[in-house]
Length: 317
Image (cartoon, rainbow, N blue to C red; front, side):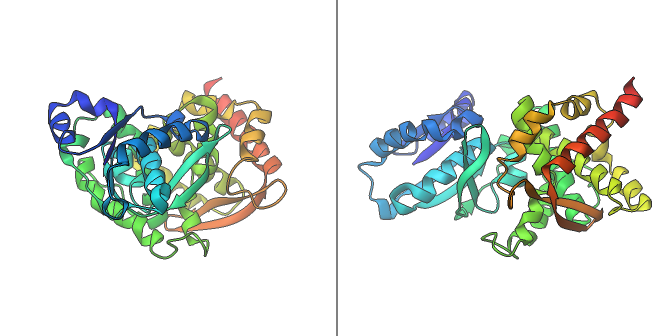
């Protein structure tokens, strides 16, 4: 059974391919698809479509970007107590990140991925023809996740096209996932680098996920420098990455820093990385290839938000 982003039907080759499935379910991509409030409606519709199929032979094929992949992956992980899953990521961001590693999530009360499963796909097909229909803005949105892996694994930015970058970026992510596939030891938490504030920016400003993660990385690296965890010479190496210039200096980042503190605090307290009280696990960076996890209070994060805002305002006036 195919679950797919309905926008893909505009492409004649996809439309022909989708007709080969005995059942297909079109969805509208976006975070609203992942809202737990609408999930029962989708499950009822999917159950009707899958009714004639033998569950032990059922494979759910999911074609779309990150939100569709999350939704379809979650469906496959819980439907009939779990059926075979195949992911076909059709955006650069999904092909680089979300299709790999098996994490699926739904949103609750506007907070991202509050419930979810770890359910790796049996197969992942990255199709160049799909990806090359994406405009330059979609490629830019992927830059945040590429920069994250570059910094976590000390991988220099590749010169050339995104397609040729995919293998090393995916391999970098999966080298972390394999050390902690079920997110039990804490190693896999490193992949949340840039996501603590990134998710805040995404939810509060409706930014694309990849762009929000990019700004979250800027925040985390500047925070690392301010705490003295990252030496000046290492900070200079980090910001020399060509991808860094996509996010800073930027008036968009100033908008992120200018969010009302109460709004930021409310979103941080809903973060799944919250440990106890007002404490969260936050990923800092000592130098490329040397991330470190520290527990920090929400009020400390708010003070750092103000410090960076004041500093950036001095640049823009």
